[in-house]
Length: 237
Image (cartoon, rainbow, N blue to C red; front, side, top):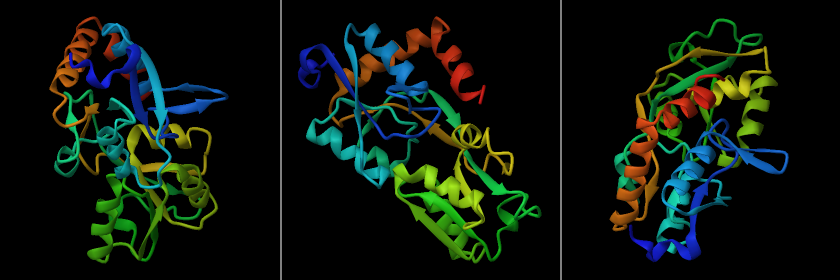
């Protein structure tokens, strides 16, 4: 493993909070799938896990932290895309997921899919992989407007949906299931809008660390640790 970017035995992991159930604050403690996975990977590598919170409003800005050395890797529910692969070196995917559509069924009971959004406003986070999907819907005249929220304002976005200020929200399915679990007026009306692979990434050129994380992740998969984390965090919400 290339230890040039791993300082004093710490594996510094970039993460954009909140993004439950991948990472979120529970009081003063950070919890979630990516948190426990990276703690397990760090332990496999004989390193101490250290979270570095990304504060930017555009998720795509998080990759600059790899180049600057702010963190060694990113684990933040990150979809692997060709554009992002030009900014970071991705490890093997740890899960497949897809965009989902959530609506306020009390305000818009007729909405069952993206085909029913004519004249409505759809909310997405800046830099999220839902953003180009929503923009394409607007370009095709299938939604009236796309409301873009700063990445860390996911709670504001869901509140606006609950209050009827926007008509729908698009986001990865595990995240939306978590966020609406205590909001009976909000319902996931469509899943599988996209097919996305999520994974950890490191700085381009840091093949030693990428290979080490891949090997550790594979061992966790073989021992059943990774599947159990998926069941605990991503399938139980």
